[in-house]
Image 1: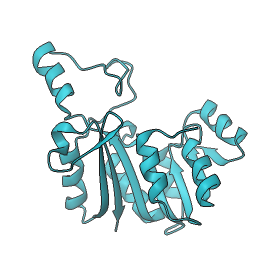
Image 2 (image 1 turned 120 degrees about the vertical axis):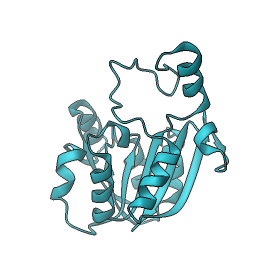
Image 3 (image 1 turned 135 degrees about the vertical axis):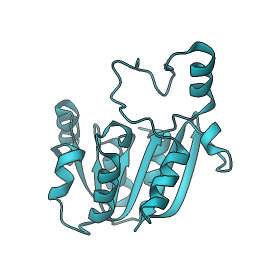
Length: 195
């Protein structure tokens, strides 16, 4: 089974044998790949009960929980990596979730859709409506996305909080794109962070 492109980037950059917490792990696809190919001790936290059941069915250690409230229960530095993939924009307090990720893990991977991508801008400019695209397929009134973060917004937040960026990857569709104009041309961003 092939991973979504942002998950493939994360999987390729997690050190073998690490302890990982995947927050918003969905059905556990990334955790299973890390377990099977990198011998990672992976744990998961997922809000959706159906996804928790699917992940547990894969033999993964996943509990049902909410990133906004349940990360506070994890001890400091209990994981090598805390991962938040395509979930930051759905949390009520993304800044606090980010702080908790970096408290829990020595490193944090964060990936998110870039709401400043040129197609999103064009949809608003020429159509006057929130876009529905292949990567943002749900209408504005039904989307779980409550914070519309951009690459530049995220960079500003981590700089403001004194968080170091160890790596960054940008995707247009399923292909890598450069970082120079990522705020305009990247549909998705992946950051590796460290305190």
